[in-house]
Length: 131
Image (cartoon, rainbow, N blue to C red; front, side):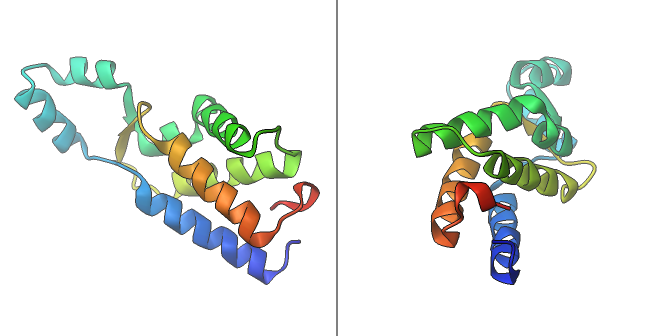
């Protein structure tokens, strides 16, 4: 099921997910560190902050999302469904400004797993045909 409706739905899914992301600039992270009385280096290490595109493209983020989706669906994902996870994360990473930062300690897995489960249900995407 890779018709225009499914592809359009995938674009909507990506847009909804991207809007949910919590990103910050280096200036904002530095200001938070100052207010907390710590160095920027300490804040970056403590919160495991990196560029948003890197966090979204990291294997550990993908693995966390896959585990969250499987938990919500109470079963393993098909290869096509796992590809959907990777596709959304790659698309969201590519859409980030080069200076956007985010933490690995965030709710990406929770948000994206919820959206994906809704999308799989809404599109009635059989496991073998997920985009």
